Image 1: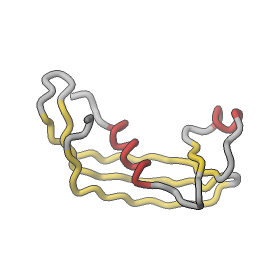
Image 2 (image 1 turned 30 degrees about the vertical axis):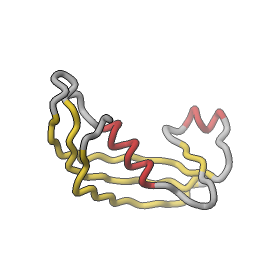
Image 3 (image 1 turned 60 degrees about the vertical axis):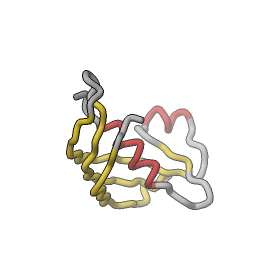
Image 4 (image 1 turned 60 degrees about the horizontal axis):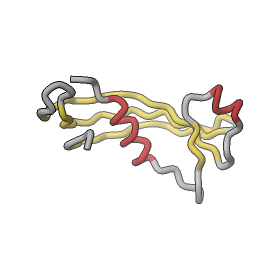
Length: 96
């Protein structure tokens, strides 16, 4: 609903172990179409942004949640980067 179209999505990044987490630093570039916040008409734009997430196999403590921006609990030894990219793409959309 917030994103009408996304094309040419390219994700690059690195994952590294930073005890007690696996940390991912990613760069995303995409051509998107989103509704204007004023007119609701489609607006084409090119997005390029970075995001960082921490991944853990165990539920983080409240202290860890207070110290870190994002901690994602990993299930079945799988990190879902598509969900992370989609969420951060929506968060990066400007108000146009």
